[in-house]
Length: 112
Image 1 (cartoon, rainbow, N blue to C red):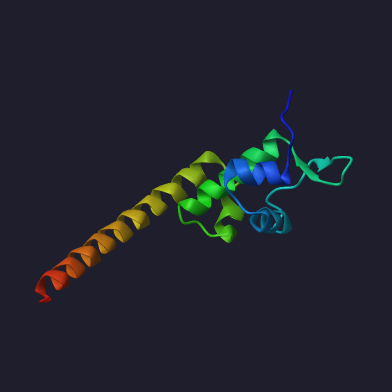
Image 2: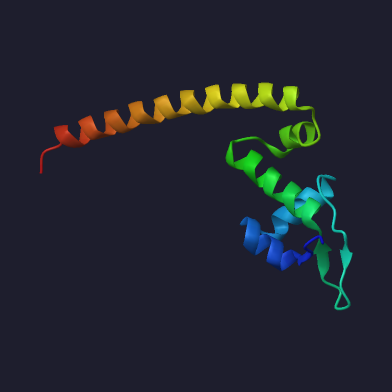
């Protein structure tokens, strides 16, 4: 049996805001599976998984326009995009480490 959750429950579980999910819906990335008797939007397991996947893509630094292209893409396309993104993240990490080193040197050079 599929687990159905309300928008509030999905947001709590996945760690996204209501506005974020509404934005995903507006872009056609996900759709509610229905409404309950109180008018609350409901999301089935598939929709919940898509929301979690979108959130994962965003955490990796992908913009929603990129997610639109990747969410239903074949694995080969996703793999290539992820490889490129890992390289970008590694470059960003190297830059941040260099900035931290520079700031630490600056701190050490300052007298009390």
